[in-house]
Length: 100
Image 1 (tube, rainbow, N blue to C red):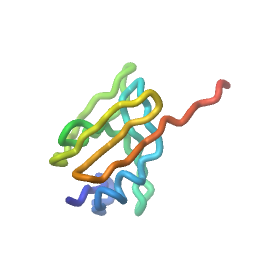
Image 2: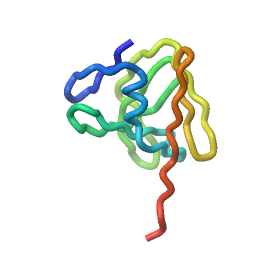
Image 3: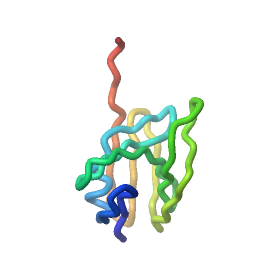
Image 4: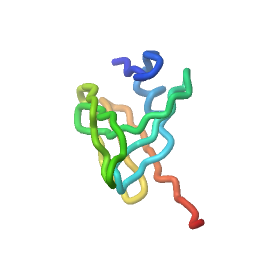
């Protein structure tokens, strides 16, 4: 399974795709992803069997586009999101923000 960048249409294997995730926002339940090829940044929600792309709006994350990824699973932790597909696993940690 190859997962595309919605900006440049490059395609990535799951390992390369999920290793490019940089931050998990537990409050909005979204993951920040930066394309390794073009540098485009997307926010997405990892859902059972699919990725949901959208935008934060009014204190929540609205999913506008969905991409099916059969077998994709997720488990929310206190400060991380665990993603699994087949036998592979990835962790996206919450970046702790310092008070201003």
